[in-house]
Image 1: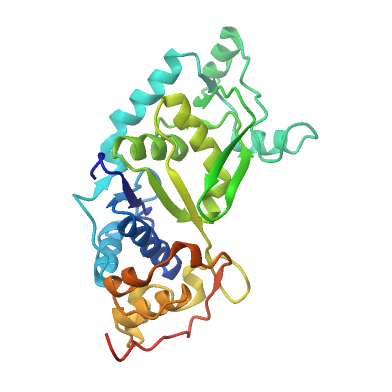
Image 2: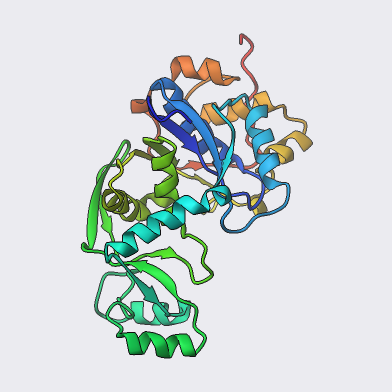
Length: 306
């Protein structure tokens, strides 16, 4: 990705095939990058669950819809040295501490009457060296948390405007030594020159943490655009169990990639069969701000005059 003129990106997790919601977000990330003269890159975020062959199928589906990208596809797992270096820098600055809490302990503590909902309550923040040694002796793996100096941070989102959200002592490196998502995504975007992040609005609540971390690392905070999700008929986030929701599913029903693309374009208020047709029409200011409720038998016939 080109770091000089800025870049956008799509960063899927290779835990399974992309569904129509993921494909719609990928299309929007591509549109925002291409209409603002940015490069567009793909980064496979493979630090968590990985299904063999999933990343290859994801890339194949994006290409089948006509989306292109610049430079080689990168993988987060190849970038661990960068993540660890960032954590080491924060540790040297006194901005981290070891945490021995289990998930259950955190959930139980978070239900206590003090502190904002969902915030880590700081249980391990002021442990003495002796207390840390005791927990290590019990065989508890230590995650590394940020010693945050704020409880909230404000970002500006391209669709939502000003958004102020929770910042707690979030995990930078998990107990198994793997960099946490909130750390890896900030380090990777900065290193790859990504200054535009278009993604699903389910990630909006975690964005103030990431933006705050960017300021601590001395890197630029990207321009964020959190786009509405695709929901099923019950108003829940689209999932594989909702029927024909992947490109492979739709092809099995006899639909072409152009018909699937036309369906995605229609959900954004446009008639187009291919990316370049949509590019000429795309106006970010007209983007829907409410979720797209998908009936899985929806289909849009391709336009007769391509």
